[in-house]
Length: 287
Image 1: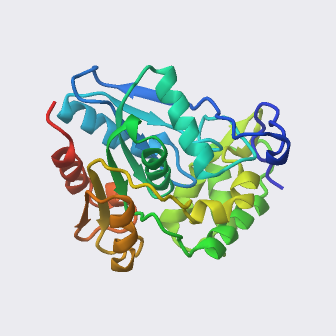
Image 2: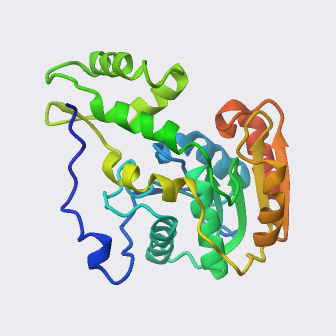
């Protein structure tokens, strides 16, 4: 069986702690400090800040402002934790902003990152100048069983030691294919396959993600709305922002503007890159 990547010792389980504890996130800052608050980019489930790196480079260059990318807990180069809730993930971003002495930001999140961005804005509106949620609504997402099957398939991957990276990826790809039938999705999941001391492991914390999958697919209950400018930017070919979500969107985000990029699926920034960049730049305040 393929081992999961071991990190520092895990903190005690949630029941043993009185409050959620933030973890220090792996991150990168691009561009010069400017008059506009930094733009913070949050990736989706099974992703990493590398997924948004091209967009970050272009946005930093074209906007003339600072862009911050980060890895969510249990993803990329960030620490593993048994807790994987939006309360915890938004607290991680709060701690990083404080550590970097960023008093206010513009936050953009895709999918799971969009829900983290919304939770941050609703919990700490003083930190968020404006908000962009990419192809996700503040409602439950009904794909738990599908993602659960993906996690089980990833756990069952078995790769012998000593293979080259390309051979290991090919073998993992063939083992995932009966369950994860879309080649593009398999390639995305395989970005998490890394070599550690001669063995191939998953850098995402599959146990924590599996345990909290319902939390990740749902959205916490909030009563007080976020008063700042908000853009919901969906793909026209994606079901993740639906007209039935509009009442809840406008309840929580009364200044929300809902736009769709024609021809884009769920991964809007990949399917229609230039249109995505243009929409984001148009929403940013003047430098």
